[in-house]
Length: 217
Image 1 (cartoon, rainbow, N blue to C red):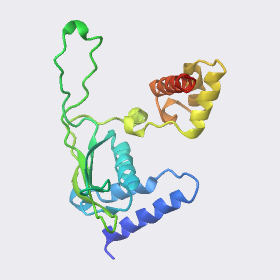
Image 2 (tube, rainbow, N blue to C red):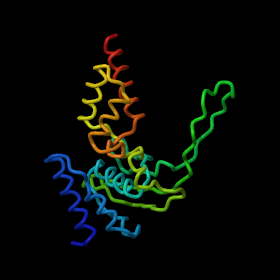
Image 3 (tube, rainbow, N blue to C red):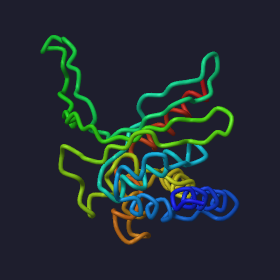
Image 4 (cartoon, rainbow, N blue to C red):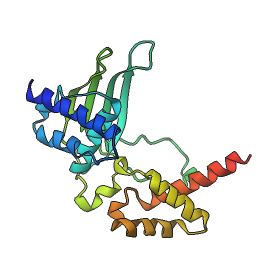
C-alpha cells in the first residue's frame, strides 16, 4: 500500500473512531495536510465522507490562518448525489455592487474579498463513494490570520450544545448576553478559547427569541 493510500485509510479509521466515541479534536486531519506539504502530493488524496472532506480542509485552514467557504457543487444527473465539490478561501471572488440609490443605503458593508484563488476540489465516485482531491491551490493573495486571531475565523466558529444550553439558561434568567459570553470566556481561559465570537452569541440569542415568538403565533 502506498504512503498516500495508507494515510487516507488512517484518516477514515480515525473518523470512524470519532463517530463511535466522545468528541476528539481532529489533530489527525491537521497532520495529514502538514504531512503532504507539496501541493502536488495532496492531489489524489482520498477521504470517504462529505464531512471528512469539509472538516479536513477546515482544520488545515485553521492552522494556516484563513476561513473556508463552501463553493461550487455538481450532482450526478437526475439525483441529489454529489459528483464534485469545491471549497474555497472565504476571500475568493469579488463583491458585486448592486445599483442602489445612495439615499437608500443604510450602511456600507466592508468588502473583505480579494479574489483569492486558494481552494480544494473533490471528485466523488458514485459507486465507491470516495472523495478524491482533483485540485489543490495553497497560495493566498492576502495576509493570513495570526495565532491570536484564529478564533475569529468564520468557518471555525461554532456554538456547542453545552454552550447553547448555557446561553439559553442564562439569558432566560435575565442575564445580559454580554455577561453570559464573558462568563463562558472566563470558564475556558479567554475569549480565544470560546469557539465563537460575541456577535455569534447575540445572533444566537436573537434567533432563539424569534423562534419562541413564531412558535407562539
